[in-house]
Length: 537
Image (cartoon, rainbow, N blue to C red; front, top):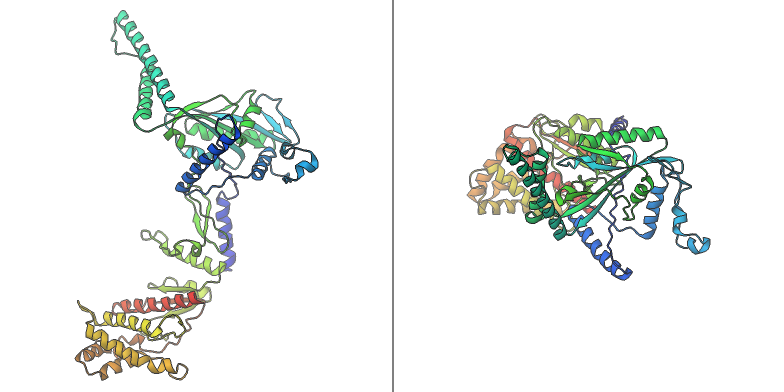
């Protein structure tokens, strides 16, 4: 029942997400040179720079082989994805065909001025007219989230810095000339020469700001052509997709303009060949061009025993991660009270329980997890003065082959006694020596005959301390007495619960303040020993 409910929740979340949409992001770059050998050397250098920059962004990238590029072109030229790609290089001499024959669709139809057809699929090519003074990276994100077959192409061409500065200076000079003409006209007409047409003032300010960006803010000049090619099985679906895209770009003060009698050129320009046949360009600076970089979110989607961690707030994709495969598998839930920290931990617990075979140990100070652990058939261990469940802090596991288990246990008992004795200075060197001596005596017979001798308890440690001749031993025994025969003797019992169950919850809700700190130390030692044992196995 729990599994069925969890699967329904996952299906609902996946339905809300965009994981049904496959986005392929391609970067095609080219150089203008005379011969192939020079081009190859330059392209390899550019490729290395691009790959390094992507690595800094945290974006995985890989160069496409010739076969992969053909498969990609085949996918774009066969919209809908129904026709399989069948090709290998040895098929060229066998068939006498070229690579174009293996990727070409059944037909092209470019007779319409504002539409085209590829096979039985309708398409329309448009360009983005950028009218906004400030662009937002949400524009491209919203376009990529559309559930429609669409290719967005950005042709970016760099302008030589010196040429760009020279061109902007020429524009500033032209605008200043126009301002002088307007001022002369104002003087002749007898009104204030500072009154200028608003458009002229705006153009003057924008041109000077752009010149300042290029000269002093390390900005470059780029020429951008933004093309959008929509594909759909019917003309009605195509019109609906175009209407949706147009609405999105209008929200960001841009306009989607259909290309008249240039549908074929725009479609070919949308293929990843680096060729731009549309001469509609918009000048942008580095900052404005960077708005269109299509990497605005970091996705986390791992295979195998991955656990669901919610939806990405920006892309709305499902986050699936296997923490054991990450660099640091530890995790923290942080948040204000009532924000869902405990619920998130319970959801992860259930997911791990259903999707993996991992052991789960819960230390539960507030009794929040006990009902869930019981529902999943786990072992709930209540640590309380009136509880029938007992855990012996003196338990020692002799299965640690590579380490000295007695030394590890002695270190734990020293920490425990330091908490019990308390005080500003804690244990003194003589105290530590006495405790270590008692621990060695206490475990000697058990280590020699583990099957015959029962596990020591706090009572045994107390009795050994009472027998020591030092005055410090008497003080330590008196400090320990309340936890042995006094009102806080919760941990002076042999273990009577199964700690090797797959699902274990240690409920500390009913413990008072006097025992809570000591109980947390004992639970930490218990969990640490179980984790170490599991790591060895």
